[in-house]
Length: 139
Length: 143
Image 1 (cartoon, rainbow over the protein chains, first blue to last red):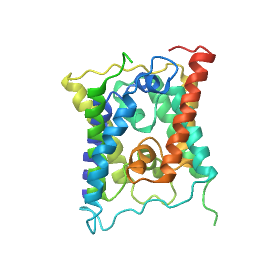
Image 2: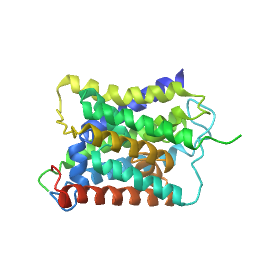
Image 3: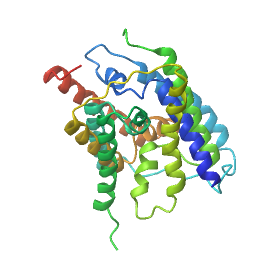
Image 4: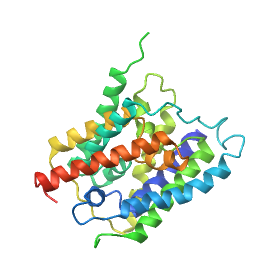
């Protein structure tokens, strides 16, 4: 229950950030990806600003023995850089470039109720489901 | 660079960074949106509650600020439904296979100086850039 409330709070703050930074607008994101057109570097500044806030804060946070609402910090993945990582990132990039949507803004954008956005989120969730079906652990 | 909006980018980025820090402090997790959503479909998913709450927050935040009429954002979403379906499928499958998206690799991963996340971020930036170049400048799709 506490974990759900804190997740709601963090998700809300994240969504506010996507709105304020205008990353909720796929047209704006495509303006960043279109280096050969009228390039809009805003997305780069969003990432830099987020990193500038997160990096020093996480340094202090990870000095704690445990998080506030649960027992331990989730250990980050330590897998090597493999073909699976790069192939996945490449496929994601194609979808991102076609639509201007990555997962966060696709969810936040639902407030506008646009058909293209709704279809995108449906297909994205289907793609995630498909992955888990195809990579179902064998028993 | 007439479309560049440095102030909203800095302010919004700061909120995203603070949200990620707060999520690590409270829940002990990295705020990677594709992992939060994708794991809902995992057979070992034992914690759908907070995941759905985080996603609900992603909608609630913009809804709250949008209602105030402050900082109106206009959105341009491609209205070709087959194209959006294909793009969504690629994003959903690709982020699951590659274990992350713009937030998980591009922000949380880079913040902890992960080489894996750097490789993933450079790869999806490059592949997205090439896709936009082909669509806009070679095939001449709408700008």
